[in-house]
Length: 349
Ligand code: ATP
Ligand code: MG
Ligand code: FE
Image (cartoon, rainbow, N blue to C red; front, side, top):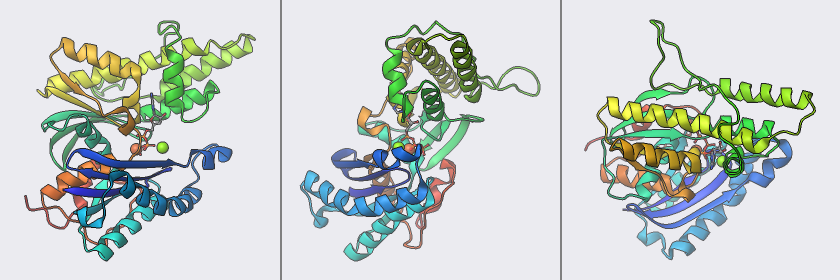
């Protein structure tokens, strides 16, 4: 099918047209500059900016794809999780267009979208596989059995991986979003310069949880380190700190994802979310996975962070399964990916 999808869960106004797993058009209008003066995303401001940007994004994506409404089989939108006011803009626009143009409406879970981004680089990808979702708000190991069939095998107990990158970047005065800045700076630093904690979760019976993560300890360790160096009047070795931080985070992510795949007899590991753009993570997983016969699939770089192409790609799979959403569906701020199927009326396969 050919799907028009809208994504407004946070601070990017995105529209895309995807045919099966091929991107025909993708527009991502970032609100970065709008929120910059506030030092973070302001929900009410984000919602209003989506209203302003959405019309142009939709018009532009049709121009880019060189298609018109007759070519569209369904209209999709991210319904959860995210900023509820922001989500409502995309959801309302998509439902209105679906109604006016007499097309089915398909709601999509944002994290299911991140998971589907890998299909855009590998259209023949098929479950079962393990997905390591590493975004700004989430870090999870998800066992994928089929479209909408997810089991969480592990995850973070505190900060998300992307959040840790953003917070450490802030401590090093690298600006927002911090992930790309740390990634760039780390390439000039020594990853063994500082010893930082891996963040292990103790189990009641002793030992550590094999697939869970904790990133708040490493963030605090970097804070203590920078405070100490500043108190000593030293210039911060930011490249060495960035490299050590990135190497530690990448190390735990790779180690636990590979162990989880092996223990569950899954021979494909799929990456999703903004941190999947990290060059250190890409390098380390490529080599380590190859060593143990694991196939690793990354999304195209452009579709790691928020975009509507990944949402359209997920919607196309739901469309093929006969899944349709009611026009009463609303946006929800919180919803686990395991509840992604709650968006559909007709769950017949
Ligand atoms: P969620 O999807 O959990 O709701 P989100 O949509 O804000 O959160 P994404 O758009 O998937 O998150 O990703 C943004 C995050 O990815 C930010 O935390 C950003 O710092 C991080 N990120 C982006 N590029 C890189 C990179 N090259 N290295 C590390 N982190 C990165
Ligand atoms: Mg964003
Ligand atoms: Fe996201």
